Length: 186
Image 1 (cartoon, one colour):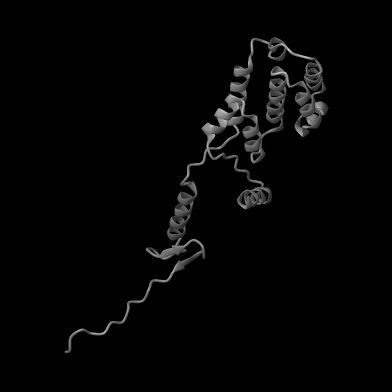
Image 2: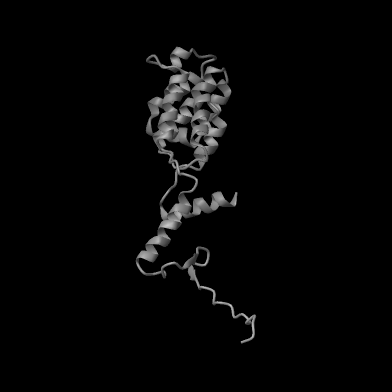
């Protein structure tokens, strides 16, 4: 939507990236459960280091192979930009995946060496991805605005006790006392 595009533009222009997700626990749960469509959709808006993205995509390919979706695994290997980068940077790792994907079926022991399994690998991946996610309290922006107004008052840029219009960026003028008609004759 437009807010995500605005966020992307601001991050791009400022070179400051907010790796925040709406619900970090839900994101972690999606990784642990292997809800890869949700995980990839969330990661699209985050700035995740390439090695962690490679590991994520590699895990998806391995799980596709494990459930017998060899054609899908080969397709992901051939079309994923992240995995094509892995092919250039880590050809041995890519060739191992490709070799596994070219088999008619694979054994979980071949996919997850050194006593690892799907659950352990997902848990490690969830920890790696969560280390890149920032948790921002819902009222953080309001707190920052309040602190900035107090700082401006402290610096004398805003008169003490004045009201501030955050949308206009100016202090509101105090309303004049209303002239009233006397109620009794003198």
